[in-house]
Length: 252
Ligand code: ATP
Picture 1 (spheres, helix red, strand yellow):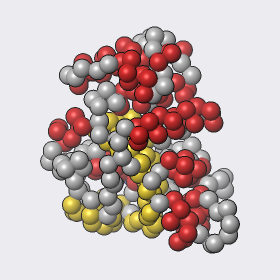
Picture 2 (cartoon, protein in one colour; picture 1 turned 60 degrees about the vertical axis):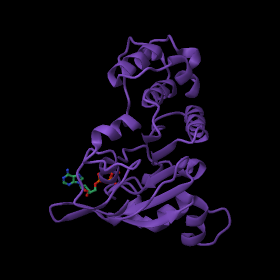
Picture 3 (cartoon, rainbow, N blue to C red; picture 1 turned 135 degrees about the horizontal axis):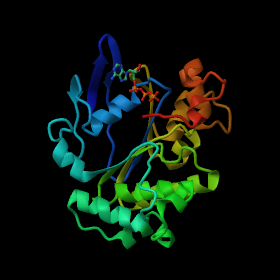
Picture 4 (spheres, rainbow, N blue to C red; picture 1 turned 90 degrees about the vertical axis):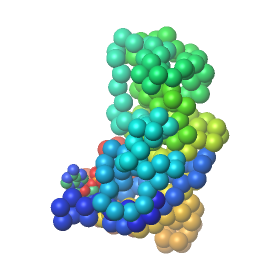
């Protein structure tokens, strides 16, 4: 993707950004509220038309070839929910019917480490398990690229780590994951590449270590979150003074 642009009236929400993601990589797009992440991701998912720039996702133009693209990508929306009295197995069968594909519920549930809850009603699952159902559904069409929008928001530390294991599984299968999160430790732990956006532009990009090296203050033990807060300054802080990056809020 190069020189992507999108304006809403006079506001340049995405102002000429470029990045690329390789197969088998976890790519994390970070930034404070209003940075332009949602707009970027929706353009990549084929849900929003761009004003300018060259964009190819899995070799397809997401706007002009959205129908083909949607067969190849997996999306887990933020705050995923499902029918209370349906089981994970039933949910997978339902999605497979919608997509018109054959799916093996057991195999998919194994991938997301949920096989033991295959026949438990959604309403009875823990928050982490519910999120794993969302992950399972995003895999029904065997996608090469998965968009995960804040997959661990609101989960306890143990459940977050369980979702991390699933993301690592996806990576080990050579799938590409586009991850958005307000948990900077998560991006640091999982992402091969990170781009930090602010005011529609990418202000830092690279591996987490490269970003810390290039933009940090040089103090030992500095984290990606330290560097993020330094880079985006007060815009990276919420009204409570808490780093927005670590607050469980909608990113896109
Ligand atoms: P957040 O973390 O709050 O979701 P974001 O980084 O995802 O923020 P976007 O949602 O892409 O940012 O918004 C970028 C800018 O564009 C913001 O100033 C936002 O108010 C504005 N914006 C987004 N969608 C629209 C729209 N449909 N019409 C007008 N302005 C919009």
